Each structure stands twice: as structure tokens, then as C-alpha cells.
Length: 127
Image (tube, rainbow, N blue to C red; front, side, top):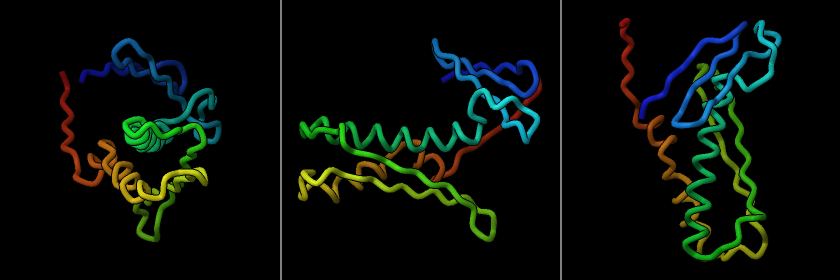
């Protein structure tokens, strides 16, 4: 996948992904205008969106209604400044008991989470 990133006015940036443009900015305390999420917020949101995708796919295969499922994500840093991300998945009372463990397993198979846990190789070059 190729993504083109452009630096815009102030602390705004844009990333072109396929036909989509993702806009980013910094909050006012970091000299931005806070008109869009910052890159860290997008990063964390992408993990939650990925978890939601895997939950949605799991439920669709079993014809389970997803309209009342709510996923809460909380990101904190521990004493060593290591990122800790916790998800709480709220299921409706009529969610089938027999699928709860499998749903958690499906949510945990999120590819974004896997890339973080398994690590990624990054390189930077000037061209």
C-alpha cells in the first residue's frame, strides 16, 4: 500500500490513501488549530476501528445484530511510559452466551493490533 503524505499550513498534514484524504492537525496547546485529530489519535482510533471490524465480521457471519454493541478504548501510559491500550466491549443482554469467548478471540485477531504486538520494521531514506 502506498500512502502520500503532505505537510500543509501550520501543523496540518494530509495523507492520501487510495482515493481518501486523511487530515491531521495538532491541538492548540501544541501550536495547532485542533481542526482534526492528531496522528497519535488516528493511530489509536485505527486500533479501535480494526477491533470493531473483526467484531462486525464475526457477528455478520452468524447473523447477530451489531447495532447495540459498543466498544470503548482507553489508552494510558504506565510508569515506564509504555503505551497500554484497553478495550471494553459492551454487548446487549440478548447477545448469545455461546459466542462471547469466540467474539473476544475474533476481536483480538485485529491486524493493526497484531502489527503492534509482533513489531514492524521501519526505514527512512532521503530521495
